[in-house]
Image (cartoon, rainbow, N blue to C red; front, side):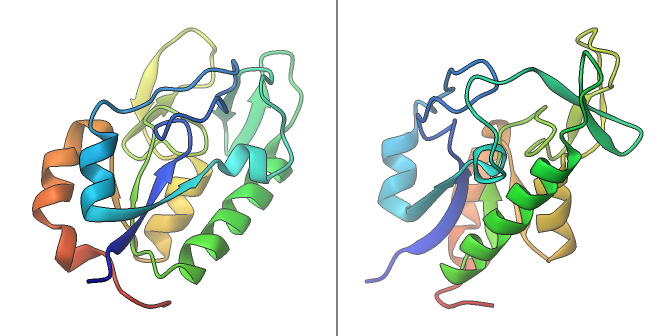
Length: 157
């Protein structure tokens, strides 16, 4: 039986691709892999950014580092490339790292570099939602598992 496919933030799958060069692997990764074919993507790396890289936050629709460097184009390129890869694998749902300027799907940092969170979405999460993907976070894995067969398709969209 073919498994449903699921986009997962590469850092949640154990890749050391976060801005600080670390990962944030999920403890339930093996259980997810039993249900889904996991497609691990890092939009920031796919946009050409290295790991580690300067911390970036969303500021008035742009992705900026604390020193004001504008990384928006790299984030957009990575989001579009990641969407293309997800579609090619038939994905319609994603499990994304929260708070990220790419993958945050319910909250992101407010752009002041003070650690303050606000409601909002990162560049990749927003693009996925616009394209009809269902988005999940590490806190909503139970809901993802319950809805697994209804959310992930067996063919490209």
